[in-house]
Amino acid sequence: MDEPSMAQNSEQAFEQQVSESSSAASQTDDALDLIEFTLDETADGYCIIAADTSISGDLVIPDQYNGRPVVRIAERAFYNCETLTSIALPDSITAIGASAFRGCSGLTSVSLPDGLEVIPSDCFHGCTALRFVDIPSGVQQISERGFYECESLEEIDLPDSLQKIDSSAFRRCSSLGEIQIPLSVERIGEHVFYSCDNIVVYCEADECPEGWTENWIESSQTVYWGS
Image 1 (tube, helix red, strand yellow):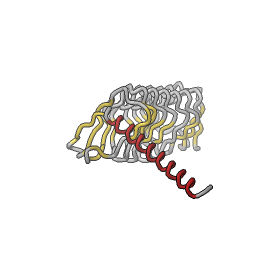
Image 2 (cartoon, helix red, strand yellow):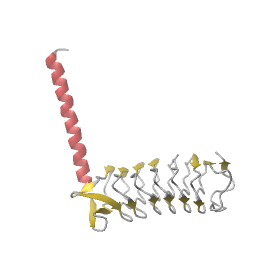
Image 3 (cartoon, one colour):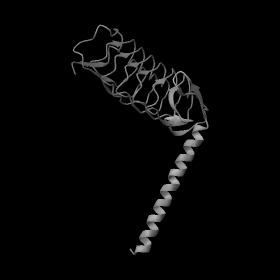
Image 4 (cartoon, helix red, strand yellow):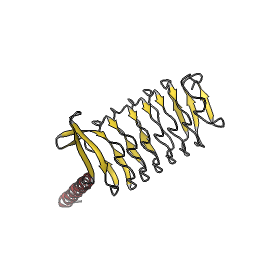
């Protein structure tokens, strides 16, 4: 290939890359126009309080808005945003409200911030297409019905920081397979793995801790201790 042709191809590749980057930036800007931010003076940053249910596709939340950090997702902020397919949250976010992503039935993957300590109640309730969630190492609690009816969720890694799993947290996650519960988990509520037909649970504890309820799992399900 002669030098002019090589140069022409390089130029075309560069123009395509610029075009794709501009298109992605435009899509991100369009999505942000569908999100309502409010200033939280106590946290010196912005909170996302609502999103239009027409928001769709892959969403990346910026770590700053109007020159200040985005620090929180409010309750029901993305409730019933059914055409949202993935969401990535920046590490500037330290708190998420209850039912924040409830009913996001098209959501397939979520990247949660490293500073998050609690996955709130009903956070992903009814996210029936959700297949992957990256739970950061600092999470200490998964609250009631956190992943209730996430029927496409096949696997999830629980961090060693986790201390509490509340009632029905993974109930009706019918595709959930093997899961390992770390030794750090001191309390488990009722019906956590009920209607998880394919689940096999490996517990690092040698026996059931006192803080775990008797009916955290169904009698027909398989549990291995001291794993």
